[in-house]
Amino acid sequence: MTSFCEQVLYGQSPPIEPGDPLYDPYENDENYVLVSADESVTNGPRSPPRHNYDPDHRRMVFGPMLTLSEFKRRVVEALNEYFSSEDAEETIGTIKELGCPEYHYEVVKRAISMAMDRKERERELVSKLLSASSPELLTTDQLGKGFERLFEFIDDLELDTPGATEITAAFLARAVVDEIIPPAFLVDPVVVGLGGDVVAQTKRILSRDHQYSRVERIWGPGDGRPVSELKVAIDQLLVEYLLSKQLSEAERCVREMEVPHFHHGQY
Image (tube, rainbow, N blue to C red):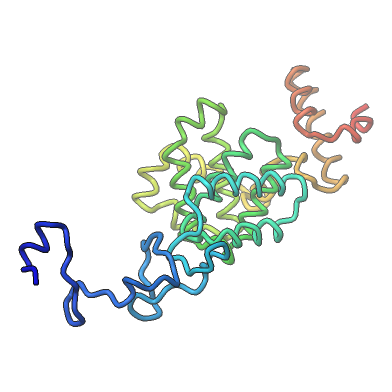
């Protein structure tokens, strides 16, 4: 019979008996795979979570079902499909099925950053998706963390998309008006420290007269609104052009509306 010292010297671990602080009754249990354990388990000590099950290996899985990089890739696919289908409920269901609630804050960051490269229609769709996702898919904390992640990368986003700060501020203001982000978020010292110009611009947007009605239509007339509202927007555009005489600016505004079927109304 080998001694304890010999077992250690030759790499043989002595068995851990019940009662020892290091004893794990699930150590040899092959009914689940331990992937990660970032969050505490509430169903008793060492009890595998019931919401993550790997059908390929027929085992329970602790923590997220996917790596963060894989989750991001799948979210991008879901968002691209959403921009075509405009079906928020289907998109929410697709993301929930990924089994990664620990990463849901990335949905906020990814959706807004993707919308920055698109037009008003897609930005309005993202605002609607965020609103529809609360609280079923996105808790208040996850929404806040998603915006904080955007704050951390805002300088890089500005390089890729000039005006990213203003766009992010508009999304944040819309989230406050839609009541998925509390106004107190904008005065949190950590948020103010991270957000800087974004938070300051958001406060300015919300401080304007009739801010709620304005912010609800913050993405302009190209966001899929009724013809009556498009007529009002075009009238305002023409008045602005007659006052400024800036043809190039008027043309840019017309293109951004993305309503070619309505161009006859401008003549």
